[in-house]
Amino acid sequence: RPEFALMRNKAVVAKVLVETDEPVYAVRRERCVFPVGRFWAVLTTPELKYAMSRGHIKKVTDCVTYEQENIFKSYVDKFYTLRQEFKSAGNTEYQEFCKYMMNKLYGKFGQKGEEWTKIGDCPGEPDREELVFNMNGRRLSKLRYLLGQVFLMTGVGECFDSFPAIAAHVTGYARMYLWQLIQEAGWGNYFYCDTDSLIVNEVGLCNLQKRRSESLLGGLKIDGIGSSVQLRGLKDYSFGAKVVIKG
Image (cartoon, rainbow, N blue to C red; front, top):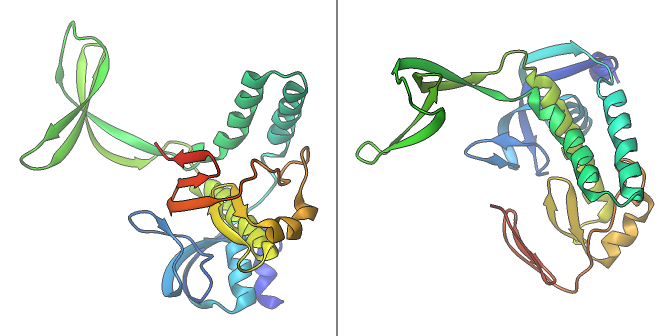
């Protein structure tokens, strides 16, 4: 299709006006939400392809293209192989270490950087950071004592050597993969979706059977089986005897 021509060999980030009845496109307001209706969103390559195939894009105001490559392949392959070896050897600590190394790298490209301004000297003070609450103005300040000097955090900006489009594409592809799994589970067969997991019923599990793999990277694994689930909110639920509450 001609509208996909640009994305055959380029990665794209675009600000678009979307009209949809599917809660598939992420929008950050006070938190990340997935609205339906007509709204503006900044989408990455996999989301744009889906939106165009569904006729959801009504207008494009800004578009950036990038050369693309599978930049994390050797890194992920190395740590996933190590993780499987540690798992076979029963070394849970190193297995978790490899998991975190794989999961955390992409976020460094979208990490925010704190901006600090020197406001004085403090000879003899131990190095530390302090949070200062101004109850009258309901304001929060952050101080850093370092090498005999004191600094005030004055803002948050983009980090040196950051590349938000990389982090955005990783999360964009992950969301679209989860959305695909939800569709395969079938309407009424899934109850909850988290960052990298789904809670489904028996029918949904059967529909996703072909996706299951204990060793394949990206394959689905059964984390638990229960006869009841209570969903109280985001990252706040009970699954059988297991209680999950973020924080």
